[in-house]
Image 1 (cartoon, chains in turn brown, red):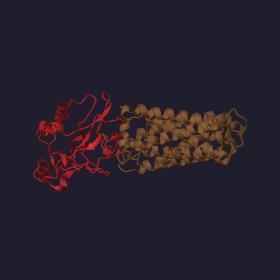
Image 2 (tube, chains in turn orange, blue; image 1 turned 90 degrees about the horizontal axis):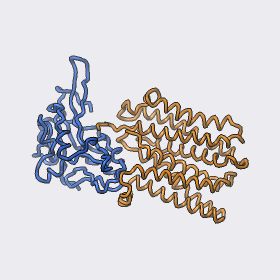
Image 3 (tube, rainbow over the protein chains, first blue to last red; image 1 turned 45 degrees about the vertical axis):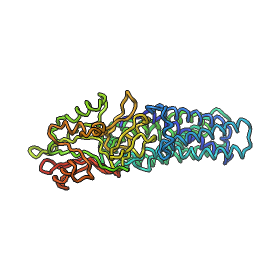
Image 4 (cartoon, rainbow over the protein chains, first blue to last red; image 1 turned 120 degrees about the horizontal axis):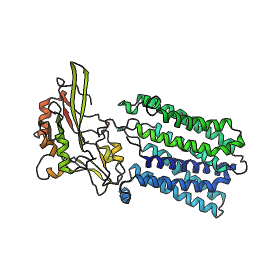
Length: 277
Length: 193
């Protein structure tokens, strides 16, 4: 099917928001050095949610009818909207709590509460596409991949916010977590390619061959493998730890571009069992 | 709860691929130029001369018994009426295109002008005055039949019975249970859809 760019940006920015805020919640519990980025991190989360939510609205032909969705609380779109609303509200309360110098218990509680819809949102935007009509999408790998992508974006987001500040003791742990998410993403990407090879109703439009050596190969190898996995991995493994923070913004840009590439590729592979029209 | 199982039965042995169904559909329902409700898809030719096979497959909403499009619709705009026909309430449609994604056959279209999703309605407006859908009336080869599959005396049930179970086919079922049926005898071509 054609690439739905508004949905690409919706899932990308909601993933970024989920990743960054979950990182903040973790830092609240670990008491790590990432404490100094809690406020800018929450602002980034809110901005990403607004951009993501705005993109999803742009996707609708008649956004003024969105309240009609309240009558169908079982639909995925209702659940996504509910999670975004809840997540955004908690982030606003968290920002207010930080601004007013609330106790550590309050901010910790709010961050933890916010992390729940954040993680659910990162998964849900992926699971929404799981449907038997689109064999390339009908796999649990997809929501887990969206979750891993949110994790990678969140880690680099936090690292980018830390750059330019005093060296933080959180950096070694952050590097390890980021590397772990990158590894998970690499394994899941490989698993997705295997799934494409064994998915029901095989068709060239949604084949692994199309990704590896076909028309999608340039964006897969260039955008996903090199830009999304190898360059961020190189930044984490090869750059000296103090230098990591200065390079983090490049890493963030790389994983954001890779996130766009993956989502665009997913839409390109999402042909129906029979694409008659 | 649907009281009928209205559906199309298309005899591919008879279809000549004239696309008269497409034209009549557009005329009757004033379907926009870039929107499709009904399309004749060429299947083949398969094989090597002189053993070649070829047939035309008119594709249209399959009026599924368990429509995934209805299941995913966030506003209830897609629904099943009492005759078992899957319809879209244009006043409720958000234009999210989620139903297009959920359809296994890609037989829903997004109208860029009205910004809502459209599809075959089995010409409910004609049924209201006891007429058959426009494509059925216009078919030059008399290859299209319409009726209640639950009524053994309907045109649709009759031709299915006459064709024999082994020559009746349907599109892949991924839990949506398509109701439309296609008749194709192996002497004409092997079913490949």
